[in-house]
Structure formats: C-alpha cells, structure tokens
Amino acid sequence: MKKILITLLTISAIAIMPGCAKKGCTKSLADNYNDEATLDDFSCVYTGNVYFWCLPAVSDSLNTLGHSILRFELEGQILDSVATISFASVEGVCNAPGVMTIPRTFTGNNEWKYKWRVKGNNFMTVYEGFITIPGGDCVGIQLDYP
Image 1: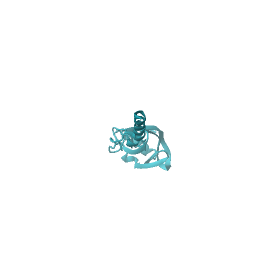
Image 2: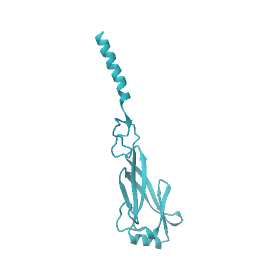
Image 3: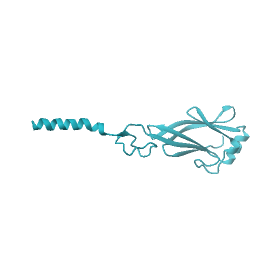
Image 4: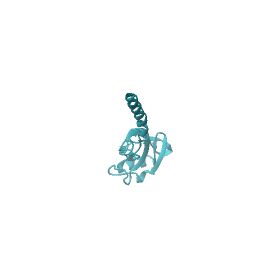
C-alpha cells in the first residue's frame, strides 16, 4: 500500500511540475526578457539598427549624377528618405548627423537578414546588398562612389 501511495504521489508531482514553469522570453539580450520565466516560449523580441552613411565627396558625386534624394529600402519597402546634400559624414556612427539610421524589430531569432537598396532619382537602384542585423546592435553600410 505504501508503494502505491508513493508511486501515485510521484506521478502527481511530475504531472503538476510542468504547470509550474513560467513561460516567457528567457534570452537576456531580448527587449522583452523576463527574469522570472523558466521556460522559453520563443516570444523574444529584439531591436537592431542598420545605418547608411557616405563621405562628403560621395554625397557630392551622387548629387552631381542627379540623385538629389536617396530612398532607403529594406525587404522591398521604402522606409525613409533624405536629401543627398544633407547625407554625408566623415565617419559612420549610428544615429549621428548626416547618417541614416533605421531601427528594425524582429521576433524569435536574435538576428535577422535583410535585402537592402538605396534608390536615387526616378527610384533607380544605386546600391543594394544583404545585411545581417543582430539584436541590440547597430550595423553600418558605407556607400561608396556609384
């Protein structure tokens, strides 16, 4: 009888234990990290930034070629634009003046890969490529002479 009682108590404890686990984001780098969560539910949200920049001479060259406005696209969606004459920096730094910084938020993975384009006048693609943005980071793309 004692063995049956111990077996039933053990089975009951095992059945109840998973219900005690608190679900949530257990990744400390995530925006929604929950230090009380004991079971990761893949809901982690990350924010990363990509920034575009060019030297003043490159900006002048783009303007001379007729690209008075630059449009910044990620995954086929134009997210922002800037007058070429105000788009220049002597060094690329996230969120600095003359630099185009675009935040991205993504769920699940702690990094995300994007197809990017920079379009000039008449929406002509002047630059394009791929970039991986890690959550919590700011990754730069320097534009060179077209």
